[in-house]
Amino acid sequence: MISSNWTITDNKLYRKFTFSDFSTAFAFISRVALISEKLDHHPTWSNTWNTVEIWLSTHDSGNVITEKDELLSVEIDKLFN
Figure 1 (cartoon, rainbow, N blue to C red):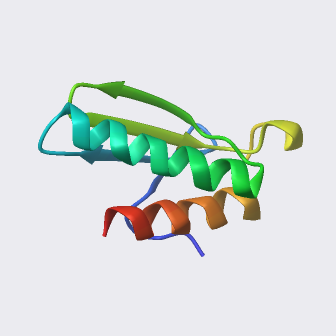
Figure 2: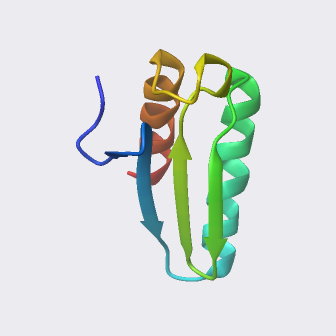
C-alpha cells in the first residue's frame, strides 16, 4: 500500500523532504542509504541544501513501481516521521 505522503509521477513514487539545514538533510540521506543497501533497492534522489527529493521505481522491472518501492517508501517514511 502506498502512503499518502508519496505521489506517483512518471511511473515512480515521489516525495520531497525538507529539513532545517544541510547537515540534517545529509544525515537523512545517509540513513536512507543504509536501509537501501539492506533491502538491495536503491532510490534516485537529489539534494539541494535542506531539501531531499526521492524517486522510487524498480529498474530491473522496466522502471515501474513494485513491492520493493512500496517497502522502501514505508521504511523512508519511518525515518522522517
